[in-house]
Image (cartoon, rainbow, N blue to C red; front, side, top):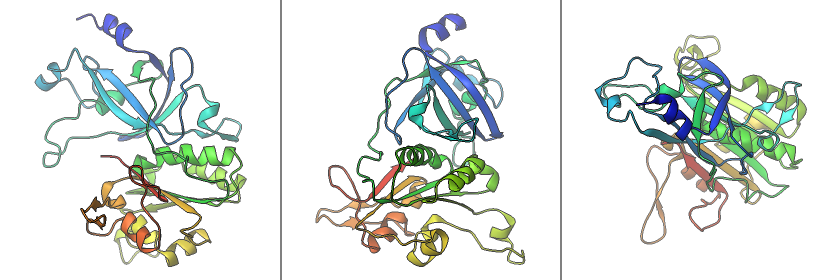
Length: 312
């Protein structure tokens, strides 16, 4: 197998930036060959590497040999750099590259008995390496339903923040007049890779607020900690009394759109019954809590002001 020939045949983009935030989290920028891609903030595309590439988590196994000559593909939302080298806002439309915010999927003998094929190979990349990038950026999770005066809530878990950063940058770039609240929940503060950029956006735009919530820091777990707050979940923050305290305004169902991305348990995706009603999972997710506040779920061809993109 001629690896050089396989790379030439299958790869059509270059890694121009690689940042290992920590062992299990990274940001990369991928520049496609040829013309820049046209897409909407919030959409996703496919990254792929050959099974012949090295892994970040050790040597290839017998299972890896079975996919050695194949491309391993996975969909990722397009993220956004947010702030350029001069400290100014930058949106996806300003860039000739695509940024991705990726978690390393690791083996867990109980939940994930087999080693994941793609992310350990992505984490072995460095600047200058080649990769396959689909030229089709797709998805319905976009800002299309948002009017210029509407308020917007962007709620994500972990790397579910990625499309929300692209959306926020687009709204701010176009001079959005409504209020924008972006909130992210992670285990540890170190699992949030855009804190400096978010702080800069808050300085620049009075209608933008970003809040980070954690679940496994000492103040989340140790009741004797001087700053103890308990585990903080977005499902708690979105309740009216808490949201107003955190962001300084109240969600009005008539003029607010809420975007949810990440953990399906956070989102709480309902099942539609034959009579048209929804059966919600338990414990309560964001969708049920928001519908109790008078909001409606956008699903299929039915309009609404709650939008979601699950990550697995």
